[in-house]
Amino acid sequence: MSGGQTVTLDIRRLVGRFSISATEHIGRVSYLVLEMARSLREWKVWMPRTFEQAQAIGYGSLFIVALTAGFAGAVTSLQAGYQFTGGIPAYFYGGVITESIILELAPVLTAMVLAGRIGARFAAELGSMRVTEQVDALESLGRSSISHLVLPRVIAGTVMLPILVVFADVVGVVSGWWAAKGALEITNADFIYGAQYFFRPWDLWYSMIKSLFFGLAITVVPCYMGFTTKQGAEGVGRSTTTAVVSASVLILFLDAVLAKVLLTK
Amino acid sequence: MIELRAVSKRFGDLIVLDGVDFNVRKGETVALLGPSGVGKSVLLKHINGLIHPDRGEVWVDGQSVTRLKRRDLAKLRSRIGYVFQYGALFDSMSVADNIKLGITDEESASDQEYAAARAIQCLELVNLDPAVAEKFPAELSGGMKKRVGIARAIAGQPTYLLWDEPTSGLDPVNADVIDSLVEKLDDELGVTSVVVTHDVRGAFRVADRIAMLMEGRIRAIGTPAELKANTDPAVQEFLERDLTIPVTH
Image 1: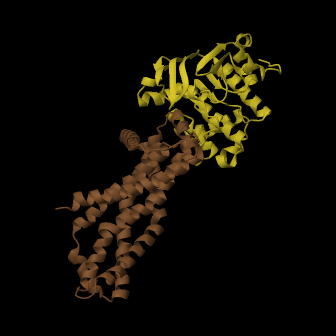
Image 2 (image 1 turned 90 degrees about the horizontal axis):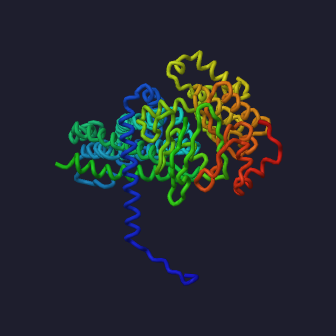
């Protein structure tokens, strides 16, 4: 190196710094969640705003959710046809496609898409409000920024995600069925028989429980990131990116944990 | 009465306030002068609890701001109007709705007729056309946003007003309008004000007392005449730049 300086990577310092930062974030997120729980009693404030947010999240996301689930269902069908060649009864495809959509693809893909669409929006909105002192302005007027800004977003997102996942389940299964009929030449009766044969009501519950957790992930993390934004426009950009990446990673992590906890016998 | 006792605040390695003692008596207007980035706005935000001190205490009307419970702090804040440097208007709301949000008394706020009339009245007080009420913040100039911010801060008829650079970025005519408004609220309504400003002439015009914040501490405080007579070279250097033109009080 020029100047004879050497740079050494001190692993202990790096781990120490990461641990402190992680602990700090966990502490602040916990505090935010506690504040949200306390603010639940201010329902006159958060309820009307929650309806507005729910409408924006639900209605506004229908197209992208349908598109994602539709392609996921069709591709699952085509890949099932490619993988399971010969010796596999036709009804088996109905089970594989339906279960793949309900158990995994619809909840995870819908959550991922919404982490980008809703999570980014929440982080950017709240981040902008933070750096332009709008959050401080709200607090200075004696109003709770949690009840006005955070709770409506978190509740709306957490409630709407399972509903959107049910919608994605339907679209995904129908598109998978349609693709299976075209590409794999299986009959309606075979597909329905397979879907019913492998389906257990718990699968739907599992899908809903997962969506609730994913809903919390894609709302709490971006709201936290937006709320703790610093340093102007650059900070808003950083918060938005971090929010989407963190929410996406958390979705994958929760997916693995919930599969282990809820599906392992 | 507002009282800061030995308030210290640091952000990372940067010491912003280093044992600040500062008080404002009821009905008084105190201007807080000092170079940019010295911590004037940070001090102001301690008064309504937007920032908590690392050490020291902040008292308003005999209540310790740092120890107040959430609900009590909200009640206290509803009596303290805060004028933000850049207006801090809510982008998604019309000007009228922004001002209505400043009506902190729930009964008055729920009376739609009163709230609408109060919004117009506050706009007129800050020299803005009532037609502005229907516009959104994005449609306003920087100066107009600032005046709407002032209208929102006074809408709830607060007993205290904290002004963060109320005249920066305004043309001289509108800066005079705001200075007159500070004087009017002080004289007619008995509002207690703390005005953070760079504008030395404006401070000498509106303030009963002026405090000079430097290097994390109150370097000088007194009436305008006392401050003019202060022999501290740093204080004189700061004042002399802007006081070459005579000031009428």
